[in-house]
Amino acid sequence: MADKDTVENSMTLFISKYLTKILCALFAISLATGCVAVYFYQKYFPGPILPDHAKWGMLGDFFGGTLNPIFSLLALLALLLTIIIQSRELSLATEEFQRSSKALESQSSYLEIQNFERRFFELLKIHRENVSEMTHKIPTEINVTERGRRVFLEIRNQFKEIFQITNKRFSEENFDISKHEKEIIEVVEVAYIILVFGVGGNSIGMLHEYLNIRHKKHKAIIDKMIEDCVLLKSKDGKTKKFGGHLSRLGHYFRHLYHMVTYVDTNPILNNIEKYKYVKILRAQFSVDELFVFFINSISMFGEAWEFDTKDEHSKLITEYQFIKNLPIEFTCGIKPETYYPSIEYERY
Image (cartoon, rainbow, N blue to C red):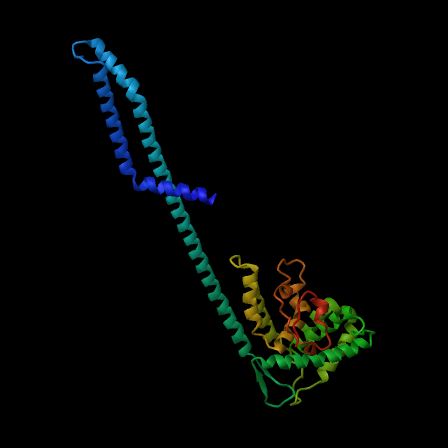
């Protein structure tokens, strides 16, 4: 098929290049044919023809019968050559138009990618700023304030302490998380809600409100947990040890979710490209940040990431392997595989 196209293209190019000469040759052949016809007529029908009208008719019949088929054939050849050239020119024009269209599409796609990347890296910069601007006064120290990623270290330490309190209280209700993996979520979620809202006077009402959404049946034991947390004071003895992190984590996770869905729902990217950009974001996480992200994702606050059945984009953590590098030593005995079995964990 390719050889046939090559031959046709070669013939077309040859005809295009020598079209004028070919048409002149056809004209010369027509003229020569006419001269030959006159010669043979004079040879076989000598004598004057002007006075005799009948001979004029014979002359017309002779030339018409002899030359018309030849001239018609030559005219047909000239017409076919013209059609071939026009067809070739139309084909070239079509190919050029297609190349121009592809070039415009490529340029448009390039501009769309540029605009996406500009926006993506702006969002990544904001994420870094959100982390670097975090501050938290350490309750176990006097006049010590953590900043940036080290705030997540303090958040993880506080969660670990609250988790021990909630686990101890739930154990009194025959909750054994080492034997009943499905019941971990209740212990984790209660501990995380207490961590987020804190037990300060300004947030205690909101804390009870959120705990009652799913854990009202455990109200009595949860009240004991909160009382245990309230009794723990900061180093200065003036404030509660667990003051909450709603203002820090709320803004942090809203922006993070917006950034990931911006990539995930972008129509100009394929799945490989989407994974590449989210991997860039994922590389920004410290281990402590990754742990807080994991705990948030299995609580009521982070359902949109993976467990919201009403959201078609609700498998983001598995899709982009968010917690594949979370060390098991940092999970407080909670097994990420229980919630994210499809992640290919890389632990060292």
